[in-house]
Amino acid sequence: MIADVVVDLQYGDCGKGKVTHYLCKEGNYTHVIRYNGGCNAGHTIYHRGVRFVTHHIPAGVFFDIKSIIGGGCVVHVEQFFRELGELKAGGVDPEGLVFIAKNAHVITDEHMEEDAKDTAIGTTKRGNGPAYRDKFGRTGLRAEDVPEFQPYLIDMYEELHHNDEEVEILFEGAQGFGLDIDWGDYPYVTSSNCTVAAALQNGVPAQALRHVWGVAKAYETYVGTKQFQGDDPVFDQIQLIGEEFGATTGRKRQVNWMDWDLVRKAIDINGVTHIVFNKMDVLDEVEQWSIREKNTTHHFDSATDMSDWLEKSIARTTGSRIHPFGTYFSRSKETI
Image (cartoon, rainbow, N blue to C red; front, side, top):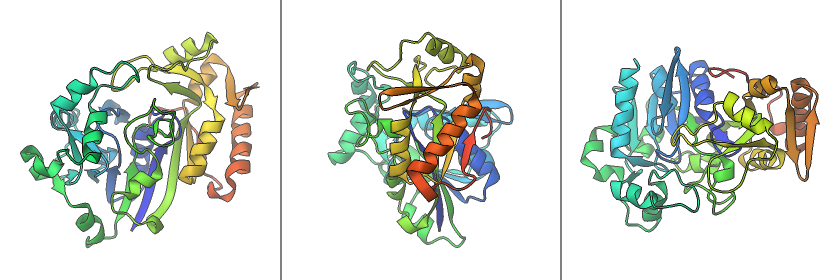
């Protein structure tokens, strides 16, 4: 068994879906597994020129790879079947490819109604928090208890450990390290674990891990109620050029320069081996390249200077864990 993981190093919305889609195209994976979150996530993917936004279903479905919603996820029945329909309408046939771990938990309509009342934290109001609360309170509903899910159920242990073929897994994470329930800026966090450790909860031994793909933006965005955006008018430009609206809620994302201290912490804790910095093209268009570190903001004369600084900083803080050719600066919606 071999497993790679895609993890967000910031506050979500960094392009994990795009990176997962790219790796599915280039790799030899037998399974793609979503390991956390629910329909609060929104992964934007461009496949053969068509834009898709997935909330539950992993990106492996675009390449005829078995795609599993893992046991660490929470699933809403209506949203799941809506996504299947949207895939079909877009020319992607999910038949026989999409499965749900039988121990995944269910988001009920009551969970959504309760979540809709939140105004303090800035939740997506998709019912995730109440669903996870009931899971850990041992009062929740599992996927195996839902009649509509029966044709899609899968036993993760049997599938991954008693399989006749060599299993090669790509784990697709949701949200981001800055929103992790334990490592994020509590209480402005999501309700699940967003680190590599959450992927292992799907029945994969630690020694199976091969690569950890960290994904970040060249700047930083956040959706929620806390004050995040800086005072510089350039952030409004970045928001417009980068089309920074939540894929799930449609809410405007607040913008700031990349927080290197957060990214470095996420690299260290997740054991990142490859890094993709997305949306470099947005900074190119506004012709400003800056990074926050501690109480300082570093300003660079060019994208090359910023990239050089990042590569040197990565080498200083993470040493040999980063693959020699494992840092990517992306300017494309479809590839790294």
